[in-house]
Image 1 (cartoon, rainbow, N blue to C red):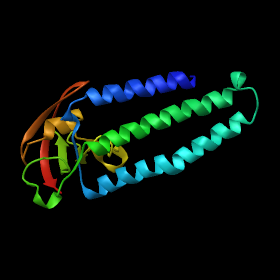
Image 2 (cartoon, helix red, strand yellow):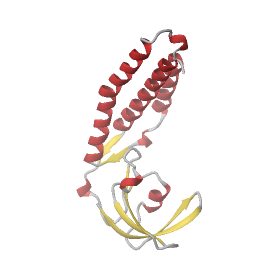
Image 3 (tube, helix red, strand yellow):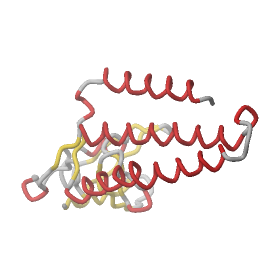
Length: 178
């Protein structure tokens, strides 16, 4: 991908991002917001420096018209800048939640929920977090996921019917905490 194509792609991405409504507001606890800021700082400083070094090294290898390493480094730069733009957008729409003021009787953003699959009696515990914080290995699922959407607003003892690609799954809410 050539530099003019990457610039064009980045401009289209930013235009599309600017057209979106404020419906992209995402809620974070202090830890999540700090992590987002730190990742953005890293990408803008050390990440950009590493990419610039890779481009410089590739440029030193000769004819740019046939230099695959240079093309790859420029493509990586475009993807890196797109990631920075996405994180800047997330940070611009981030809202900090004071967890101590949240109602723990209902499932809300940042809730830690213990659920039981009624079909196979398997118990799972998840924390409902923003899309950028979601990580299944850590038991954190996106607030926009089908399971989280089905759990929102429910209380302990309620049954949530969740629509997933494989059909419907019934979950019983066993515990809610912060």
